[in-house]
Amino acid sequence: MYPKIENLQFTETGNFFLIAGPCVIENDTMPFEVAEKLVALTRQLQIPFAFKASYRKANRSRVDSFTGIGDLDGLEILKAIGQQYGIPVVTDIHTEEEAAMAAEYVDVLQIPAFLCRQTSLLQAAAQTGKCVNVKKGQFLSPEAMVHAVDKLHYFGNDNMMLTERGTTFGYQDLVVDFRGVPIMQRNKVPVVVDITHSLQRPNQTCGVTGGDPEMIETIGRAAVAVGCDGIFMETHPNPAVAKSDGANMLRLELAEDLLIRLKRIHQAARVM
Image 1 (cartoon, rainbow, N blue to C red):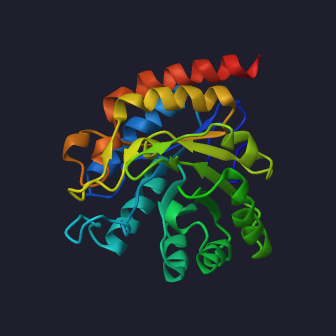
Image 2: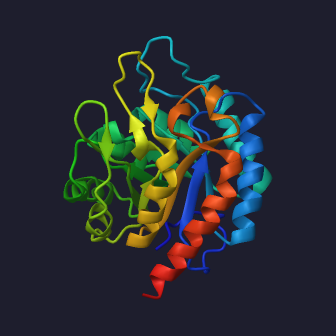
């Protein structure tokens, strides 16, 4: 099942779709480097692709954490990437006011996991008419996401998807319950598995979120085997110097081998 997004290419291939990019717009060159690599790779593999990056990071552990290069500058870069490569672009929003602003530049509005119950935010996103991706809260069961779906329907938007990104396990870890994929698919919407944020180690005393990136492929393999509709992942040319979420991002040079293997597993699972 594919979301209804203009310029989502290769929609008849039967492959999972991919939402990927760096965590945040850090400058005016790196996002284009990532986009160019991913566009070439996904076209070669015939994997439908949407580029994702945050123009602003609002949920930060410390007051001195990087939040972005400026809202309009970040949004202009996202728009330029979409136009240059002919692909849809995705970004987060955090307040009702951001919904209309971001909708002028991007194709998909993403609701962060911590905000998935915010009715006014869901309303504002729905009323833009854009596709809305709601990330499941780390504190919610997959069954509870029916209420986010119902809210978007109520506010007049049937074009949505849900994303699994792990569930809080203790104070500083997340686990993925893969039963959540078919459970959320009961809502008749595409379900995505975020294979990088699911590996965060949040709430570190140093104020910088940790991660477990060596397990990215493990989560990805399970996600496509269980039948998710899409994969979400954050990737960066050098995660060690990334300004946000470097501890759980995939190194960009590893994306090709990962996607090849995930595609093989997905194809095998479809014929079982």
